[in-house]
Image (cartoon, rainbow, N blue to C red; front, side, top):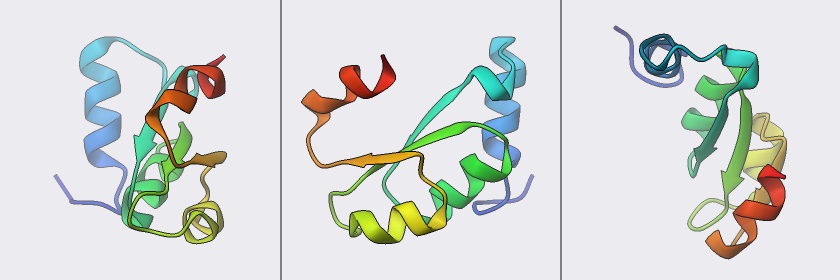
Amino acid sequence: MNGKPAPDVFLLAAERMGAAPARTAVIEDSVNGVLAGHAAGMTVFGFAGLVPAKDLAAAGAASTFTHMRDLPALLG
């Protein structure tokens, strides 16, 4: 298994949970994590705590947020 930014860990997790990658949400706070989730075909939400939101968005995050309380609304 390859580490991030390879999608391996996310694809394995989805497989073990019986979830289709396209119907899976990933919460990531790093550029490599966003790249991995995006490469896995998952919807990635970027938590901009230490890494700027613009960097997470540029890596492929569908949206970014800075407070965990905002996550439920993003997930719909």
